[in-house]
Image (cartoon, rainbow, N blue to C red; front, top):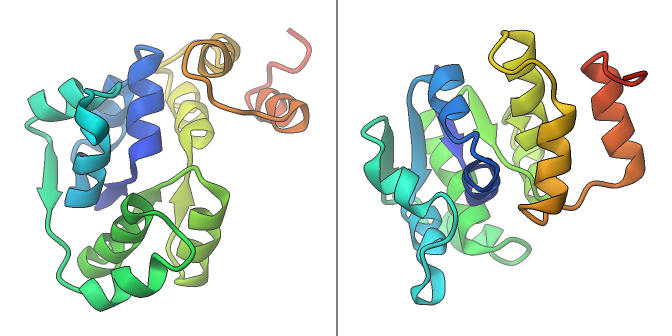
Length: 164
């Protein structure tokens, strides 16, 4: 399975101490150079930066189709644009992407997209986490991840945790 990740799933899972779920679920990840540069933006080491640097199961790529990246950057940031371009170049089975506009662009290009909530739900389904509620709470409180009340409760219902 070829999986390409944008910055958000890396930073948010690292911020809540669940970065290793990516390796456990997917085995190998591919990221674009633009994603690596976002992890190092403004001279800071953002959450996930050190984890990515130390992960021999994550491969960083330079995008070949820069024309596509330029077109995508009309509406998306560099990381999202390069992530979509890389997914197309590698014929990825899955793209890890959270931002709404990026998800819509990827889906228009017939890419299968999962965000951090989907990752946590998959981890629960496979028995890698017992419950998703504490991870959703940590995403909001620790990582600063925005979840509407509707989406929060929907994720809990998908995890069979709505009544807990």
